[in-house]
Each structure stands twice: as structure tokens, then as C-alpha cells.
Length: 289
Picture 1 (cartoon, one colour):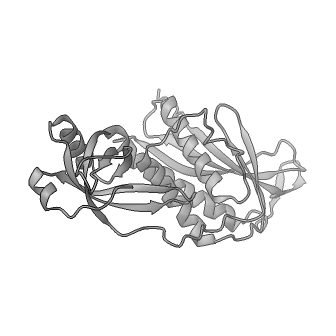
Picture 2 (cartoon, helix red, strand yellow; picture 1 turned 180 degrees about the vertical axis):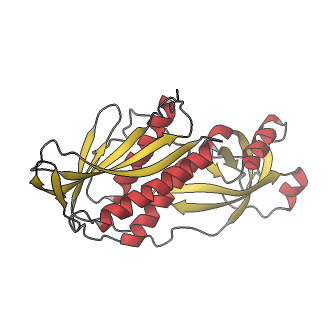
Picture 3 (cartoon, one colour; picture 1 turned 60 degrees about the vertical axis):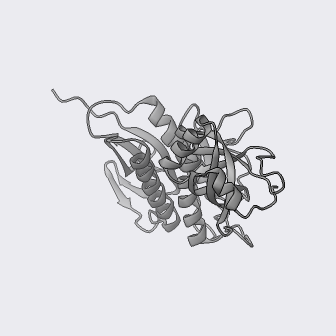
């Protein structure tokens, strides 16, 4: 006998309008126009695309399909709202691990938090006593989808409010109403590439982070605090780790600054390579921060 697939509900979006009108004991009329909601459709499409991309990037051969399902409950025939669910469905009969369920739920929470105006800290995803669960690369992926949505709808009024139910340790019910968030205006979101020499203080490959201390102009020694850089390639963390383990941790770096959607300045590595003392002598040095 085939085992039933264990489908996980990640989020439910509930229309406030009664989409069915009771006619007789077993007959209902579908209120088609009330079931239409373009804002809800847009959010569901972006969430499904984000979750699918996130799984593809972070879990090899995950075998999980993200899909949408629309249902109604006729227990109270005078109140029959439309429920639109975002589901995670495994290809096999094996259950999705609790860790993956938790991560996918957190991705949905972060996206919804990012695109709604005036939500405050209702989700508390950045609470100081709660560790960051996403690597910089994973955060950038979520921010990319959030920012694309924000830039497309640019403070648009939500014409037909609905409710978002987010499952997890506890169910969170959020009214989706008012407006979507407007884009953050930045005078210089991305700065030009900068080339400099630095000492490697190691790397954290699992989070694609490289730690560098910039070489100063006067004594040509590494000075100042260690700064965190987000690596664009796995090879960047390997180069930094190899240099750190070497007796001469000097590296040549190409980096740039980028301001994220929350106004934080982040530093990114475009290239990093082993450098020599000859490079140090020949390189035009700049003052450290």
C-alpha cells in the first residue's frame, strides 16, 4: 500500500469575503469576483518563486515541490472564506525534516515582514537574543525577492485586505492591509570597486565570510579592526583561509560596498588573491579607515 505524502502548510492567506452563497442544503453559488484578488496573487507567486529558488540553492536533490492550493470550509455556510495555502510537498512518502520546515517558514516570515508597511517588530526576526539563522548569501537571496517586489509595487494600496496565517512554534495572524512598502531611496546604493592590500584573518566558509585587516599607508602594516566581507565565490574563502594559515597572510583584494534594503552598509569581495612583499612595495597604498 502506498504511503500518503506528508504535506507541510507554510502559510495560509485568507480572504475576508464570503466566496460562496448557500442556495440549498448541498448547493452553493460561487461569487467569482469576490474570489479575485490581484495583490494576494502577486504575494503568493513571489513567495512560491522565492521558496523554490531557496531550496534549489541550499539543498541538493531536495525533492520538495512548493505549490499553491485553494480551499473553502463549508462548516458555517453563512461564512465561507477562501483559503489560499502555500504548501511544501515531498516527491516521496518521506516526511520533510523539521529543520527544513522551520527554515522555509522563516523565509516566508522574513519576506512578508519585508514587503509590508508599518509592521514594526511584529515578527521579531531580528531580536538581539535570537541568533541570525540565515547566512549573508541566503539573506541576500531573500532580500533580492523582497526588493524586486517592493520596487514593482512601490507603496501600492492593498485594495482587498486579507489575513496571513503563519504556522510555526505558534500561529501568527497578520492582517495584510494598507499599503506595500515603498523602496528605500539611497543616494549611493553601490560604490565603485576598490583595490587594496590586506592581511587575512581567516574565513568562515559555511557563511561565505572573509575577515580582513587593511594594510596601512605609513608603515605598510595591517592596522585597524578586522572587517567582515561577504565572499561572492567559494574560492574566495579558500584563498583567505590559505593565506591565514601561511606565514605571510598578505592578500590583494577587490571589493565594493553595498547598502541593503534596511540601510546597512555591507562589504563584498569581488576578488582576492595571494600577494607578495614585492606587491606590497609596488602597490600604491591608501590610508586605512
